[in-house]
Length: 332
Image (cartoon, rainbow, N blue to C red; front, side):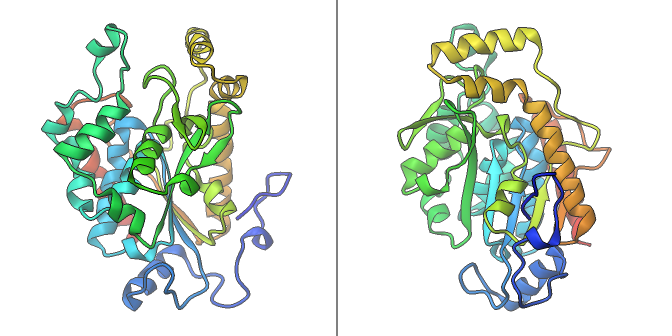
């Protein structure tokens, strides 16, 4: 599902193999694979099915609920790859771990929220408002342990997306995930919000920032990676569009980029992230309209509005339930 220079997605660009049912919907393919009991690398069909998970900080509780439904329906092994950004990457990691159910629910756990991953007082003292190192190195080690080795060993490949701090380009971190330490760094990098989460994260000799600067919904990256079918988990309602950065925000971030030696590309990516989001929306809407091989699942209009930095456990729990219900409806 690549894109022509003019922006049109055509059937010829969909990487569809010459054999098989080219019109099989993504939901149909997932169900067939579940019935077949196959896993990635052992398929009887020619398709490459990718799960794409949008980012959004605490709002990622919505996609956690959607992922929980995939777990309950026994569909996790039906995917060949998971492409995800920021908070979505955390959900993608939990989905491929040995404890997906409890891990995906942990967005609302009081002991996780009490671990001060998000802490305005720490920011007032000069530290990061969002401490991704504390999340990955402390919470995911001692509070709700994440089985990093299981993620690395899972036959479904994991593709967290980050933004190169020098060039401002989107980067698939999958090639760097060679061991548990690199995986932890990759999760931190994909969710490293400029200014809010501290300095860029070093991985493989490069510095990275939040993937949402370039691809909050990495659907096209999954298509460019060879996916023939996409199931896209959204955390934003249809009426919730990314806003343009304010002058104050741009001024603050310019100082951040200079302080941490980030290149001009990262600053440009942040300044135009709303345009990138709009372009992604258009691409995805067109792809969904053209074929059932692409399906996006959005939260319903009654889904509670969870801010990126929310610490309200009741609200987050409601968002998880709303996401689970939206996915159940989508699967029919």
